[in-house]
Image 1 (cartoon, rainbow, N blue to C red):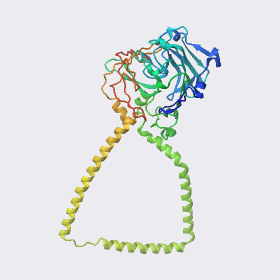
Image 2 (cartoon, one colour; image 1 turned 60 degrees about the vertical axis):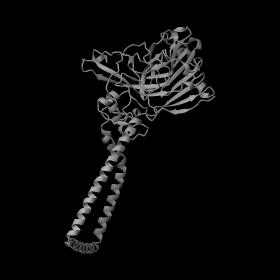
Image 3 (spheres, rainbow, N blue to C red; image 1 turned 120 degrees about the horizontal axis):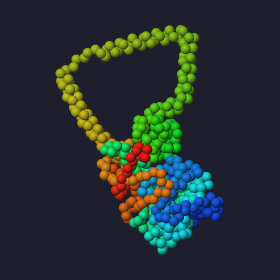
Image 4 (cartoon, rainbow, N blue to C red; image 1 turned 180 degrees about the vertical axis):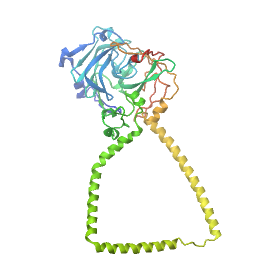
Length: 467
């Protein structure tokens, strides 16, 4: 049965292929058909539970427009793409062909291996079991990261409906997620900063569509980060409100991993008026040159006409003098005073005051209507455009009561822990250490998405270098 469907996720377009579709077989990378010597087994991940290991890429992989040179492969059926390692790897910044409570230590035949051919990286979870339900059988699936940004999920063995997998001890997700990190100085403690992670987008793939011999292809859509100059940035029409920051020499919508710099340097600078002016000047240069040549030609023709016909010039001057005198005479007649009675004056004043009162009332009604309409449209705009400065202004100034998460750097084999509320794997925006739980809509999507509270943990940075 064919399950092919195209879904627009703002940053990506997903294509789902069923067992009967030819791409399902083509997208699966067979170990036997590749150079077996280039497949590398991650031995540490092949005999453990809830662990992750860093893998360096031989190429730059664009993820949400950001170029990645290394990733973190986890035993739980997903790849972590963030720079900062913490214990919430399952929360956000992931590529998840099948995130679940998988345990490779339950069988000697379970392995996690990868293959890098210079333009694509394949990571395969081979014959792995669910820790809390071994009886269902083994899972074999893989994900492929291409140098052009394409992501492929391919499934060989899925013994149970993914929707039925228990998420009490580990979240179950299929899709993508990305977030940005913001540092906040803590005034009470010197050289200590609080690190906050905001998930700004997530791609959810229907779990019920995942089965044996199916595949999902995720195609990247254009982002503001692809523009390297001001003109193409501010005039782009790709579905994002792209702005140019001259201080950073960067194009952005304000919602990406570099948001910290974007905010600290006050980007964008008043809607890039200088940039727009330069762009308009460049576009209008040719038109201006054409207009100038035409004007100079017409002037030359007029001068030649006046030079060659002096008699016509004299007659024309006489005619203009006569017309000016006639006009002056008419104007003097119009300015002569006329007799107006007192009754006419009173009537005119009453009518004038009535007109002023009715005009003021009408102006008040119009202003009130405009204010109400502006408030309504502003609410709709902020709901559909969470990346706008107005939305972010309200979002970042809510009272804080969220706990803080422990981060660390430099670990090539980090462990991760389940931190989501047991049994509540919410298909929405994950926010770690947020100000306060708030409703956060996806761009161009009507479904509202909600964050969750994490366990109470503390972050400690004793020096600026460690942050």
